[in-house]
Structures are given as structure tokens and as C-alpha cells.
Image 1 (cartoon, helix red, strand yellow):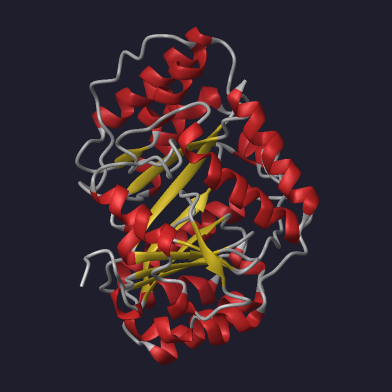
Image 2: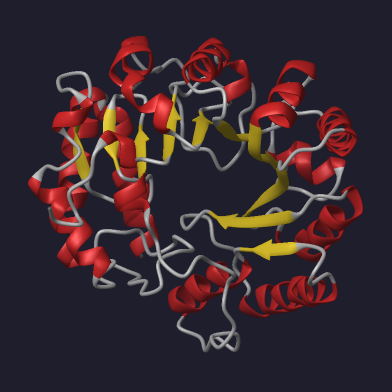
Length: 356
């Protein structure tokens, strides 16, 4: 049997996007309709055969802690597989006792999306948030973890936009101060900061912090941001010889699945290959469709054409218009358009802004 043919039992990791409901209105978020949510039959029935085999289940939103189905999904998964480990990205505002206990007992990864190193910038970007409450929840989680034997990794993250560029180094310091293992930097390609010299200065300061805390704090994403920034601004990347700390090989096409709130099935959120629609198909009938077999074959040879260039595991990123992936872009657009024309066009507009 071909190594690219997989079975349900081969899947280690599942990401489930339950909906767009959120209690914040972050200034860089492109969502306007926060009512969309997954058909419960997807995670209650269609994905049920997966749960006994999973090592990791990542609960996604929106903001997962405000989506009722998040707790129900966690309970169901634990019933089917007591050894399963959960992952989550949360804004932290409602990450109270239930969530802290769940993840200390059954979690492998919690990320707080903070986006600012102090109250002023955090609340300017994460509109409707409360910096003190978020940090209290983070500190309580760290304390609870310290009191029990577990393998939970706690991280904080920061989307680089013009409003917080000056806090890159401060955010690295904050991560070290509160006692998390990792700080993760992302960026919005449609909201890149102006001022090349200012960006250079702040990146250099943050990388100094990365070097200072090496061994005690992992700093992820700064180099990927600057790589993309240099491409867009047509400037030399003085850090091009430095590398992010990433796995030696991406195994998502063989070991991972991602389901969005429409029921669209993919290997991961950073690829453009749609396996199919779980509203209309059984999971087992989508695992080895022709296009995903082709995807796996290409990935096994180091061909990342169907992957987003901004993915940290993309070792051969191709920025700009990827003609070889045009079919993937078109398929995703048509799928999204059928579900919500307005959302589909917003995504296209953001992509076009990135290409300018």
C-alpha cells in the first residue's frame, strides 16, 4: 500500500473550528459576522470515529471559551479517549476555573493572544478586553500547572501591526517575566508597519531578547515576519542565515486534519487543498481523494506549492502570487462563496492587499 494512503487510525491531530463567536473586536480582525457556527452533527457524528485515535485535539474559534460547543466537544472527546490532549488559542478573558483545570489535567498547549505588552496597547488592539483580568487568568493557570504534574505548554502571542511594533522587545520581556515557555509572533500581511528603519530597530531589539533568554524562553515568528517584510519592501534581510526553531519535516498531510465551521475538511489551515465537505460526505471517503494524494506526494518531495508561505514549517516559501497554486485559491474561494459571498470577497480583498 502506498505510504500516501492513510486510515482514520493514522490521524494524530485534529483542529476543529467551531464558529466565529467572539467577545472581543480586535482591530485587525476581518470578521464582521460573528454568528456563524459549525453544524453540531460534524463534531458529534462525522468526526466521532477519529476521537479514539487522536493524540491532540485543538479547539478553535472565534473565541472558544464563549462557544458552548467547546465544552461539549471536550467532554465528548474525553469520553471516547481519556488520554487525548487539548490545545487552544484564547484571548484569555474568560479562561477561568473550568478551562484552567481542563487544560492542566488534559491539555498540551494553551496560547493567550495578548497583542500588547501593557494595558494601553493591549486594550487598544483587543477591544473590549481587560488586561488585568487576562494577566490574572494567565498567572492563575501557570500557578495551577506548577502545583500538578503535567506536560502543558503555555505561550503568549502577538500579531505585529503598526500599533504595537514598538513593543516587540517589551513583549519578549513580558513572556519571560510571567513564566511562559514560548512567545509567538504572527503578522497581518495586509497591515504591515511603515518605516523600514523603525522595523529594523524593533526587530533587532526583540532578537536581542531572544538571544538573552535562549534556553529559558522560545521566541517564534520574528524571523518569518522579517523575511516577509523584506520581500515586500524589497530590502536585504540581514537575518536570512538565522532559522526559526521548527520540526525537521511537516507531517500534517499524513497525520493532521482541520475542519472549519462550514464543515470543510483540509489537512491543515495553512494549506489550500480541500479534501471535501463533511456535511455531504463521510470522513473515511475523503481521506484519500486524488488531490490530497497528489498533495502528499509533493510534500514528501519537499514541494510546498500548496502551502501558505507564512507557515513556519514551509521551508521553501514562495511569496507573492503563486500561479502554481491558483487552482487551490479558486477552489477555496468558490467553497467560501457558496457559504457566505460577503466573507469570500473580504478574504479575496485581503489577499489582493497583500499582493500589492
